[in-house]
Image 1 (spheres, helix red, strand yellow):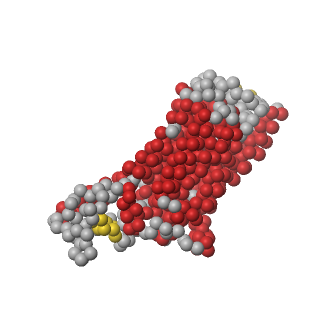
Image 2 (cartoon, one colour):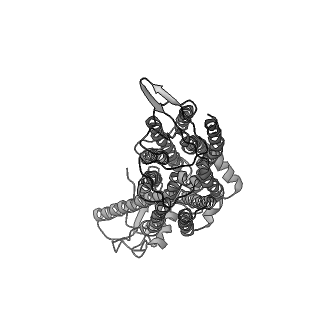
Image 3 (cartoon, one colour):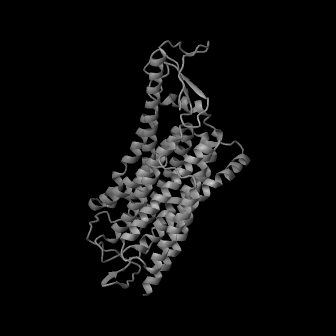
Length: 472
């Protein structure tokens, strides 16, 4: 399939009269397109990685935050922490000739507190941002994300009070949500493959962040682990201002006309770039505007509400898949932690749950182009079934060891990541071009709403089981 059109322009409005042979011209256009796509794919992968990295670190460290950070504590496998507990209970269960201990630990404060501090500001940001951010330049939005992320990591790392640490979580929430709305909206100006690479990058942030935190906590305190993560906002700035710029055309006497849509549903919109236009960051918007105006959101409130009704087919599955997986992550993980009879101590078990979940997310978000799944409602249904199985485990203790919940956690990540990547890829393909920027940003509110409801639901569940075990 022809994905780009390169030709000599013969009109009086030409910037430069081109003269190379057709084969040389096509070769130059192909090189430009390949280089252009490579930079876009690399940039959006790194932007997805950096934008979500801090949030993953915060949630992976939630167990440390709710306990209050001991800045000199280093987690060592096989050496249990001296944790205080609001209550604990254990029941010795026999499986054949083997006795298992399910002495489950119960935090006084659920990690759902961290989840709520992380998601409520994000929900508010995503509700407001799609309606106003198209009036603000991308440069200002990205700079704001970077400043908020750096501030968050410094606050969480350096303060000792739990409530102030939660204020740092709020700052990270604002950074991550503003970044998600900004970069998802930005993909509307690029080929649909940009969404896939963004999704893959967000999945990679989970793997690198969660597993990285597990490894860092074996050798570093919570404070030092957070400070190491300051590399993420720095890399975000370098990616946006240095990588996400188009390469300068090397051919000195050419006018390049590139089909603006490089994906399957390409249109006839074109862009002309002269040899005098060095495509550095200040000219990058030339490409974006060539496809559709940057201010492409539905103009009136009525039009935006009508568009939201169209988006419900994507938003409802997103809501339920995120509700189920975050109720598992922040409501049930802690209630499935074995305090004794296992080689991994309680704090590290929680981080292993997070790491396995993020690994599943990364695999599924990176495979949406290879294995697209259009019925995303099926993914949310399976996730709700997954929630039901793990809830039975918390209530009835049906699993003989922690490794089966580990497997369910990985499966949970596969479902959640697949729903996210396929939902936004479908929006990019199926929504009218003039409404894509608004739609991609607005649909992201569905996952935050699901996470918020999960956080509120997780608190009474946690308190119920802690109280029940304390009475045993």
